Length: 166
Image 1 (spheres, rainbow, N blue to C red):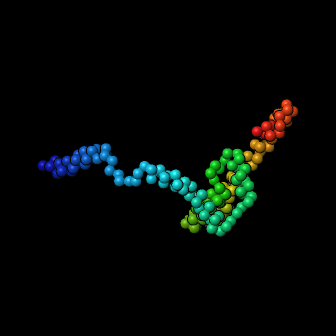
Image 2 (cartoon, one colour):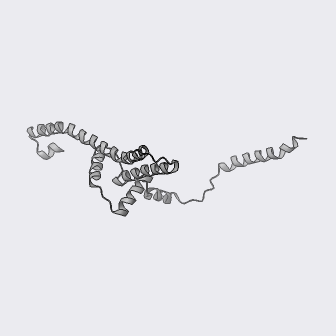
Image 3 (cartoon, rainbow, N blue to C red):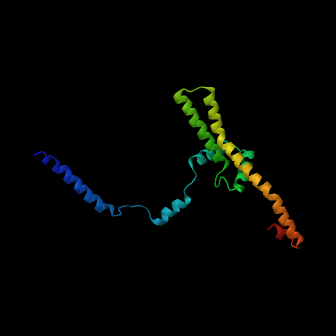
C-alpha cells in the first residue's frame, strides 16, 4: 500500500516531462522584430563597467590628463588598449582602489602594508599603460633606422620623397 503514495508524484513528473518536451520545441516569444533588435545591438553601449565609470568621472569633473593621453596614443600605435580611453584606465584604477578600501573597512586591516597595497593596486592600471606605451616607443625606435634606410634607398633610386614614404 505504500507504493500508492508514490503514484501521484511520479505521474505528475512524467506529465511535466512530456509537457516540457512538447513546449520546448515551440517559440512563444512575443519580442520585437529582427530589425529592431539589430538596431538596438548596433546602438548599444558596448563599453565595460570600468570604461563607463572612468569616462563619466572624467566628463563630470572636467578632468584631463594630457600625459596619460599621450601614453594612450603610443599604446594605441602599438596595438594595445584597442577601444580604450584614458577614462577607462582611470575607472579601472578607481575600481581597484575602491575594492581595496572596502576590504580594509570590512576586515579592519588598517595596517600600512594594506594601505600601501591599495595604493599599488590603484596605480597598477596607470603603470601598465605607461609600460605598454614605452614598449611601443621602443618598437618605433628600433624600426626607425631601417625605415630611414629604406626611404634613402628609394630616393637614391630616383623616386620622390612622397613615394619613398608611402
